[in-house]
Length: 81
Image 1 (cartoon, rainbow, N blue to C red):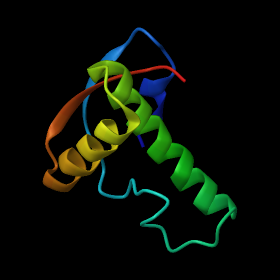
Image 2: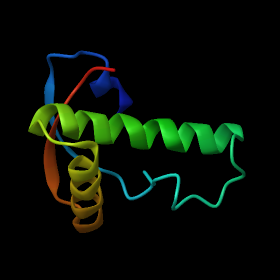
Image 3: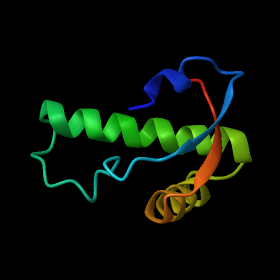
């Protein structure tokens, strides 16, 4: 994954969100298992990066996440936790 891009709050990166990055609602893992938590945290990092860059609500950022991931198009996101 490209998680290193989330370390610097001032960095902007153009990324293609991997199809393997899924939301908790798309996961078939047992809730609170380590794999589920890793999937959830990765999803949250991407959505927050979109939200920071595009100055939008969580809901809008989540919609953008799905749209860009599903069409495998590049999107600019901003790092930071």
